[in-house]
Length: 376
Length: 88
Image (cartoon, rainbow over all chains, first blue to last red; front, side, top):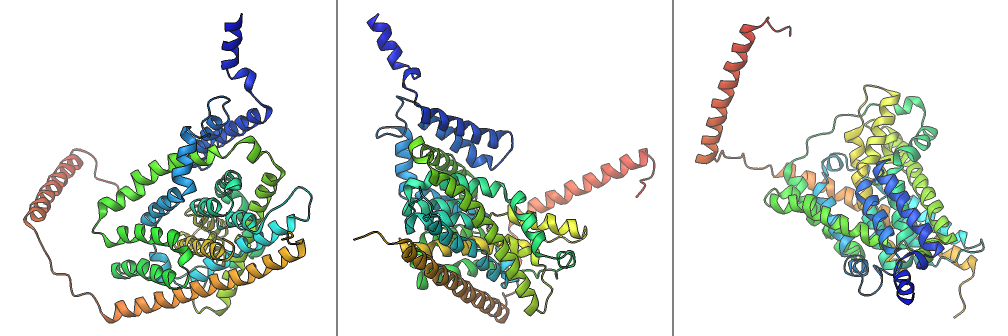
């Protein structure tokens, strides 16, 4: 009888807590979104599975000695995983459209308004009972508006590690929701005539310009914003490997094998932060709400900036491309293209939107550096 | 130290908003200028006309490619002769 008792105690069933069950359901929900709805499956699948693992009673995945604990400690606590991913993203990014039309950098800058406005909003939420966001927390939440997963995780791991799970889940969910969140805002802020504007063909950018560009970005960052150099530096390294054309093997590894390996571990590590005590709080609801607000404000700011630019520009600018200023590469640019095609079936904006899109990546990395420098 | 009141926090958030947004704009504006300078620089010093370095392996592979293309062309025309004339 005693043996049966011991055996019973070693099963998970008597040890399940309500919170763990709910978090496992959240994990299943993320798996459902990844597998059935195809929402950012590359990340939501390992995150969802990590959430399952970390909430298993007695297994201790996320305690000292457990697998997820060490993965988190090695990769996310140190900031290494998001930076390696950023290198891979750099190796996949083509700055051609941006170099051909450098004005679009302003669109990438304007869209970062979403980040800073949300920071303000997060602090304002403190007026409600149940919310106690510090300035660091608010900064980490606000970066969701940058629509850049690795940047959000990097900043959250530095500023508010206890909110990392919720922030990462919100960031990736909203990135998947870009095609739903953005179009209504874009349409509300533009007239049908504006949406039909055709833009001039972009010039061909020489290889040498593409090689010098990442070096110039790095040089500028070193000079004025050293706190952003981890992100921008790795991004530029990846980009230089791609554009130089002399280390194709390294570039291929960075944008394929390495980024895939790191993505598995990053997802699991983020999932390990989805424990009930960290996630089942009213603050998580606040983070999810603020994330959506951040995204919408960023989109709106980008579109409005594009309208402003169009007023002063000699060349025609379709204001829709401003919406791509919230990074989310290349989803946001595709959304711009689609909304443009709805207005004019012969108007392909994809290449024009890639400029602000990659500018948004730079912009959110710069914003992250500024936040680190100011509140870190 | 007493925790900051909400209005103090809001004030700080507002100043972050101003400082942050303006620094992002300044940084990316400087970047715009640098991109334009890079473009000017590259135009001012055009690349020396690329001399054709034809290595033996490249030559033989392109030779093989020529062979393959000829073979395909022959095969296609032979196939088309057996069928109706192509509509396009």
